[in-house]
Image (tube, rainbow, N blue to C red):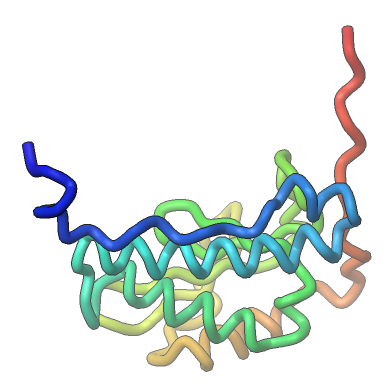
Length: 154
């Protein structure tokens, strides 16, 4: 076992207080989630030394590009198996509302596809092009982001 002074693992990032953001409202929760998810994946890429061309690096680049797009930045991001998914709900169960998802491909590039049937929409080379496909295929009637009501006590 290594001692702390021999450990070259970067310190865990300080994440925004998601519970406090939820209490403020759904928009604050979404903002906190975007900040936190980018920080966590950047940290993972450093810890596991996933460099250019890795799925982890691709996801970090995708998250940054998606965060820069206002139409996606208003939605709650979540990840699963390196896929970037979006939700109208700030808490589980997620509400993807027919939105597509994007995933980095090992060695570079991205796959944008529908969530439930995995029908491929496109395989762009850059995270910016993947974001453009996500935006192009957003359902036109998306409602506002929301917090699920708290579960009733039994």
